[in-house]
Length: 355
Image 1 (cartoon, one colour):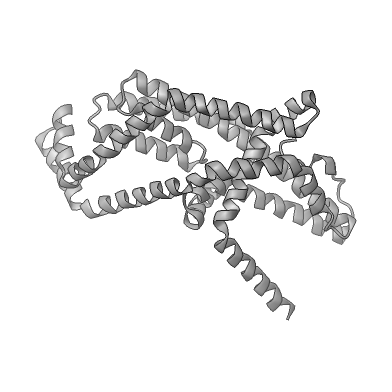
Image 2 (tube, rainbow, N blue to C red):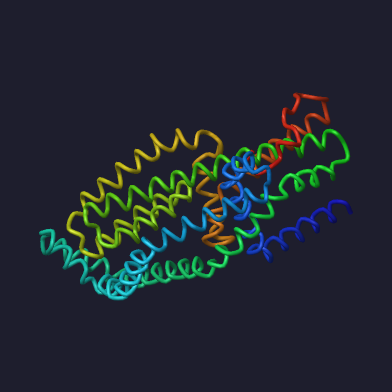
């Protein structure tokens, strides 16, 4: 009977998570945003001695920065995005008919046989390419439908920033024994440290990529450099899979648009990927996630199936969080069996976002 009740409870929890996944995603992004701005708020709080004023000051500065960015850069990105979107149907038609193979081949001096083979390949796979384009359009539409998060997330994050300490204390109050309390303290402390480091590190890597992509592609005259560079910067936030998708998107768009110096662009993308993955990322990210690349790829794919584009963004921290809970649970079970194994060094005062 107890097993049946546990299975039923587990099924109800999974059902609730599936039905309310959009709301839960909004709350998760709010938590991520709170971790992102917490250091600035804590620094200002030392001067103002008021957390409310510190939160208001940081939000005001962010609003001003975004307003300046969208005023000077936003219109250019919007114009390029509009032109690129308008040109897509014609480009896709050229791909489906194989005409793009003839145009690119003639421009780069390919033999007639090579052009004919590539054209035949594109024509024979016309349906597959059309399906891929439709899926890409659906994903883009999903992102557009999630624009409401830009308004909701900062509002929810303000509550987490203001009352984060009380949330931690409330959760600890459900512990009935000292081992349970230590287990919750350990989980919350590890999650706090992991999320704070991961979010700031990923944002830093994404910012590096955004600046490098836009700067270099603008310098070598890649068409729609602002749009492609911005997309590449956002995709950098997705570990493992995101950078690969960004490189394929940039190269694919450059080839379809007839960019002459595609070999220079390919070399740049390869050099930047090696530099980012083996020089910059290890120094910024460190070993905080402790996830095998195969586990990361599985998490990204599963997150996409469960919650679409947003699930992809959330997959890696969610998997790392589950790993933390599992590790702490094993310590808790061993402690109940054999007595204290080690002393938790975490205190309740540490259970706040970003500390």
